[in-house]
Image (cartoon, one colour):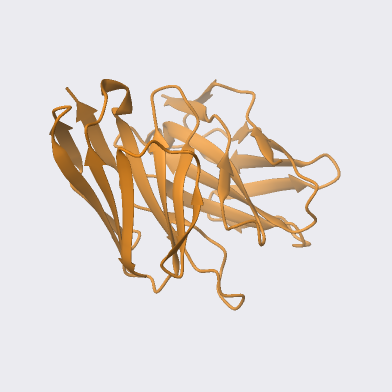
Length: 115
Length: 115
């Protein structure tokens, strides 16, 4: 139990579906991330939110839409995905406060399959 | 730009033996942190150990130790007394202080512990 919870753990969706991935952290952190991990590829940073404001968007296609309503919750809304979007999506969180540790903790991941 | 290199795609070790997983990094920033994560087949990314660039001593956490050689820009992970449960993918990562709190990952090393 890392304090970062992702749901659902597994998701199968059609290309025309709309679904969302959810991430919740109970660590008092103020920054959250979405990473994508495809087979045989390094982890790719998708989005970074710091203090609920998006600070990074690494040219991710618009069919992925993040939402951070507060510092404890992060969503990834999925719409009209492609089969190549099938991957493991990892959420992570950390604290940017100087008095806090630097460790970035990850959730268990959401396995997404687009059919 | 920051870069992490893990040159060992796969490693084998016998149970109860020690193993070293290599990691080299490249950055021009003087302040950074180095992380090692373990990823079992279930997908979760488990934090193992952290080393700050200004830390004088090598980090240790139980059976994990980090062999930090700053001049060589290497941060190798040493696992002592390997166990079957150590079989997993291992990732080295770097975070630049003030660099948007992003983690840059290496490509990983698949470790297999044998009887």
